[in-house]
Image (cartoon, rainbow, N blue to C red; front, side, top):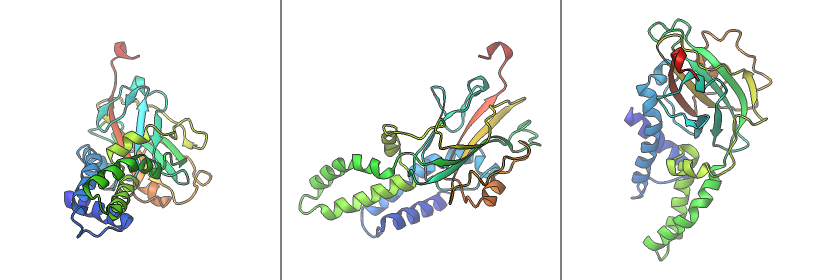
Length: 269
């Protein structure tokens, strides 16, 4: 898996930045790209999200999900009572790009016998991209300028341009954590945006038995789809792969999941 991820990262970033890998500093940055990609994908492999629901993919968009003040990270636990209402979802990307998001439960009704797999909780289409990665880069340029000038004082413009290309490619294609933190300072697109088209209304987690995974998968659209989509006739036996194939969405660009289990009656909020 590591080899596959590295090959995808190196190829994607090299094409985006038009960088020659014979340049000495190219490989460390490629390994940095691999690190951030692996950090995003590995929990999905461990949690069997990749395999049970989706195929291996290269994360390309930052998607942050919050239930109240609780940030959803892969594998965290969210109480069903906290997830009664739709979460606040923030995505990066360009404003002229559109995305589709689905939320599913592959463990219904029971993780040991998921005979209803997948149970779909939410479908939203035509989500516009949020922050523009080039705006993130513009905030980092003064630092890049100072560092490259200090290391390569005469001349430094070639190295400066190369590092700019790398930063742009990395933030656009795999969104490293430093860029993620900066994007939080910029105006986001959230689940309250009127630009969204809700195809299937949100239903919160209702795990009857066992620990269930609740997975939010984001796809990039090739065209507006909101007026073309019909809500599923049933919430049971949804298939994320077939859904994406039918709409020509390709592989996901971001995915996050959380766990939930039935709460004791005396502990429900």
